[in-house]
Length: 250
Image (cartoon, rainbow, N blue to C red):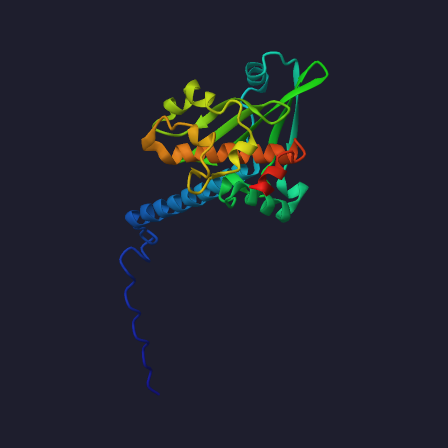
C-alpha cells in the first residue's frame, strides 16, 4: 500500500499567521470615515432644511414687538387683542379660490399655503375697538418681505410699513415717504389693480403710487400685491366682507 503525502498548503499572505494579524490600510480607513462624516452632515442638513420649511410654512406674520408697535401705530390705544385665523379652518379650498379670485392671482409657495395662521390685532382704547393691524409675508425679488398695515374700523389704511425686506434698495422702500402714499386707501381702490401685470385699469389711486427704486420693479410689485392681499384677508376675517360688493361690480 502506497502512502501519498498531502500537498503543502500555500504560504499565508504577508502579515498573516505570524502573530501580527491582518494589516489595515490607514488611507482607506480615513477615506471611509470622511465619507461617513459627509453623509451624516448631508442627512442632518436635509432634515434641518425640512424643519425650517415646515416651521416657516406653519407660522404667519407676527409683530416683532407688539406692545411697542401697537403704541407706535395707534398712539391713543390702551390695549389690543390678538386673534389667529386661517383659510383652511374658515372655508377650506372654496374660500381659498374665492380669495384668489379677489386677488387676481393664485396663492403659491411657502408664503401662501392654505393653512397659514394669520395673526390679526384688534386695537382698543379702553373698551372701544378703534382699529386693526395685520401683516403678510410676500416673496420679493431677493427674498421674503413683510408688509404691515394699520387700518381704521372701515378698512382704510392709516399706517404702512415693512417689518422685513430683503432688497438692495430696502432703504428707499422703508422711507416714510413711500408708505405715506398708501394712507387713506382701501380695498375698493385696489380692486382694479392687476397684481400680475402691475397695471391699474382704469388708472386710479394705486397708479399714483410711485416706485422709489425703478431698478427694483419686482419688489415694488411685490409690495403692492402684499397690500392688496392684506386688505382682502382683513375684509374676509375682520370686516365681514364689507368690500366684496365692489369686487363683484369690478
